[in-house]
Image 1 (spheres, one colour):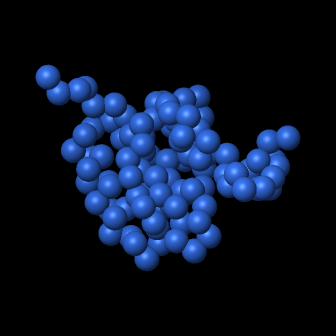
Image 2 (cartoon, one colour; image 1 turned 90 degrees about the horizontal axis):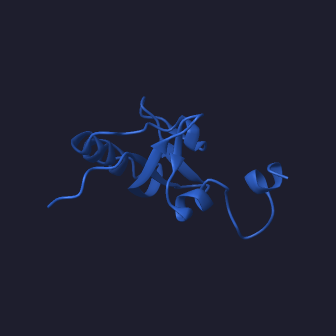
Length: 100
């Protein structure tokens, strides 16, 4: 029996900066997961992923990540995606430094 579809967001890394980015409903890329499009339909998710894969001049490695609707917008359901929302882990800067 097939699994029930779980909501997704399209995520990737910015080609030049390497930052984690998410696709918005208006085909823009954002560095804030709260602004990402939460996709609740499997066919629509596949179409949105195709849009991202067509922007390889801007992004690297687009994929669908599980998410849920949170208070401020989409929220990650897996620790990997939660970790990616915090920015680079190689040294204390950016979003990590702002959280302190």
